[in-house]
Length: 285
Image 1 (cartoon, rainbow, N blue to C red):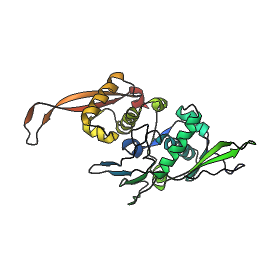
Image 2 (tube, rainbow, N blue to C red):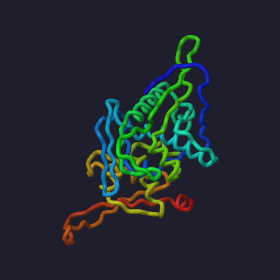
Image 3 (tube, helix red, strand yellow):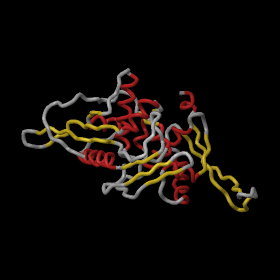
Image 4 (cartoon, rainbow, N blue to C red):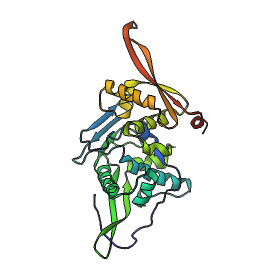
């Protein structure tokens, strides 16, 4: 990621974001990001009969669920333009201050350092998927941001002050938002949630479009991109269910009798499904 230092206004800002945060449906439904606050350098993969995702790590690590905040902000700016009848370009220019305002970040010196790291991971992470975007597929790898720059000004004393952020959104996500228009609003409290809670919210938001759903617990674990064991996930999910902190949705663990392939009931064995119920207000929205 290049970090140019210059003077003067080089571009017109797209920020501030005046509408709600929106996210693209596929990025909600599938595990494209590491569920980590720290560095994650292992490759990630998700594969079903209909979807394949491969994430390759760089020495800096793969993009995390917290780095995703930048993409949500950009997607929201893009959707706001589309709704206003403006054809958005792939390049976006915004202030870190407005990004922090939207995500609830305090804007400390550490916040700016984290933003720089996030941009580097978003530009460096390599993604390969067979999910089509805007009616087109692509066979090779791509990065979330094909370009990411921090523009600075200099004080008389020679200190650098961040003026704005310039990024170029990847073709895949740009096409998905521009052509498919499959975007959903996020609850404002999303940014206060932990990594697993964020993914639970996103999966629920993208899945419960027609009301309550039930999903196998291991299926849900994989869809979240949860890397620990099923036993560990069940323990974590039980805690989250008891705390009931996911906005707009309630989760319930349902133990059901497991069956063998020949149809016989297996004694003393139970499988768990997760029941996800949207709030009445969300269903009526």
